Length: 219
Image (cartoon, rainbow, N blue to C red; front, top):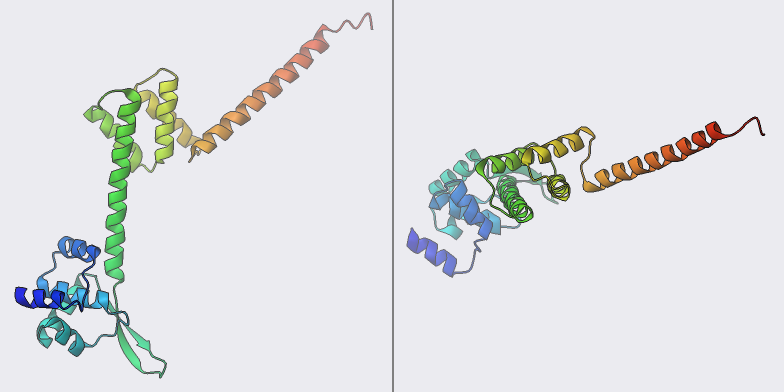
């Protein structure tokens, strides 16, 4: 079988894409399953022609069909009946399961990278290594769906105020969450509105003071 695989790859008939290797490892595909999946990943029309598949990858019809059925059971491929321009029905192989698996794993990798970046930023801002409990705090914020932007914004707000305790940062995140903030622009807009309201109150208070100080007897 190794000789057949080597011959197949050397012929340049099929190309092995990187993501297929990840799928093969993640789904624990055997060699026959991998060959069949590789064929359909290279077959742009997607027509299910068992003879062509068998001849191209060098497997028997029985082994090819067995491998394909296994790929269907693992949710990587599916068959769809489609009419061609002559209204003839054809079985088309869909690889949606493969693409969904790849995308899901990419999202997990991105999430891990985001967390690593957050940890590094915290250590840089605080000037020290994080404790296991502090790592748990950050993980909890991320897992709860708090945007990374708000987590880092709360960190910088705490540092600016000279408070480097995680309970304080957690309180900031909690208060921002209650107000429905999702970005730092939301925070800034809220602060701007508060300042405008305070300035408005000061103007009103000043006018009220002027009225109360007015000497109505001399008017």
